[in-house]
Length: 105
Image (cartoon, helix red, strand yellow):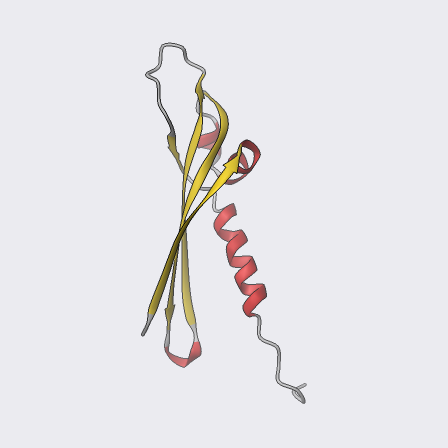
């Protein structure tokens, strides 16, 4: 079995951040301005020609706390609602979709 992994980050605007985090994370008393997502993709080759791909996304949100008495924070670690990960899986499935060989019904 062989395994590959990739790590990358993507900067998000406010709308992208809010699209991809949980409702609980959205309900924090913060005026969001944007964020980043750190993505880890692990792919392992399995027997019989299959591959297993695991995608993890960790979000970091930036903004201003609306509670004037709260301790100032530079960023907040936020939970994913899995939209981001599912979008990557959809693209991977489309890219690696198999077509039947010529002459196969």
